[in-house]
Amino acid sequence: MTSYTVINPATEQPVTQVEHTTAEQTDAAVERAARAQESWRAVAPGDRGRLLRRFAEQVDGHSAELAALETAGSGHPIGAATWEAGQVRDVLAYYAAAPERLTGRQIPVPGGLDVTFKEPLGVVGLIVPWNFPMPILSWGMAPALAAGCTVVAKPAEMTPLTAIRIGELALDAGLPDGVFQVLPGKGSVVGQRLVDHPLVRKIVFTGSTEVGQQIMAGCARNIKRLTLELGGKSANIVFADADIERAAASAPYAVFDNAGQDCCARSRILVESSVLDRFMELLEPAVTGVRVGDPTAADTEMGPLISAAHRAHVASYVPADAPVAFRGSAPDGAGFWYPPTVLAPVAASAPAYTEEIFGPVVTVTPFADEAEAVSLANDTPYGLSGSIWTENVGRAIRVARAVETGNLSVNSHSSVRYWTPFGGFKQSGLGRELGPDAVDAFTDVKNVFIATN
Ligand code: TAP
Image (cartoon, rainbow, N blue to C red):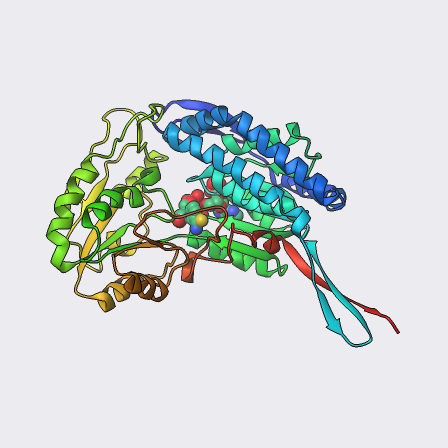
């Protein structure tokens, strides 16, 4: 059996060693999940809700421990990691109310009665990336469990620690054996087996568009249900009539959150030409003011990148002749540090402008008018997120409707609320997570006609 040494990205020191799950162990876990599903779906709705609330309480009671694990294993600043553990608790508590609301319909038909049932799909395979190990795990896990599905989760190879601990907390909360299992290991082994195994009825995948394409092809073999949350190259559009001070102060947090390792990162700032100079003047202190450093310190805003290889990848977007307008700071010495970096002016063909960087690098591009802003924002195969800054409410709505992306904020850089739907347009994904309807994605509708004559 092989194993993986989890490395602290801020110190480059080993944290712990985690054994890889094999393909045979993955099959055994899927079979256990399929057996557990028979009884889990039969648990009375109120009791299923109660168990999920207890699971939320367990997470809440261990949130400091989970946050510290994430800081050590993923380099997230402790403040952010604490929020992420709270997100798992809140998502579980939100979907704990769903089992008692999984209602079907009664449809008028001649000669009888027609009713529909929302039946749980069965075993769900949940494949999670390394950038937000806790929240993304919870977004699939909680509604699937609420629907009466059982879940086999595969965390990213580099960041398995919090998922493993959350799996233990599920058992402590009283979830029956086999209802929620966490299998650390490789995507090419555990992830692939979840995609291929006929007893896994749905895959929830969050990760790169390239791997998402392979997974979609794999799911086609068994007509497996699929949710895909993929990459992004989102725009932050600043109009001349906006509150430019607020727009500039917020812009670093729209892209450098989690060191830019964020699918919703607004990594292209588009600014109306007439206010470009003023915006850049205001952006510089906002960028240099981002507190980058020791992720265990309470006031740190940005930590390191996940690995040396990822840092080299991010750095490749900023070659020696790159048009660096200004950059923030980053510690020297051990740790996979990279400073917040602003590139301007950039060519429309520059990889930093066209590709998802997944690091703290942002480009700034001017536009002449609303039509050009929309056209630039849409000139990408992705469509996940974005922001619009304007004081004109008509324009805000017009542009929000015109930008081909799933999640937009006006005069804000916020991205995800667990009680509103989240997901991508175009190559950023398929299906929606979160919000009041997310449980439906883990059920199939069964239609039953009962003759009365
Ligand atoms: P990927 O390399 O695509 O990996 C994501 C997950 O898939 C990991 O658990 C990985 O396992 C697994 N995997 C890899 N190959 C697989 C295969 N052949 N079959 C099944 N599973 C496989 O992405 P990443 O680098 O971890 O994450 C970054 C990407 O995720 C970015 O593009 C980012 O935009 C996207 N992302 C999107 C969202 C949303 S909500 N849209 C949120 C976060 C991240 P290993 O760890 O073993 O490789």
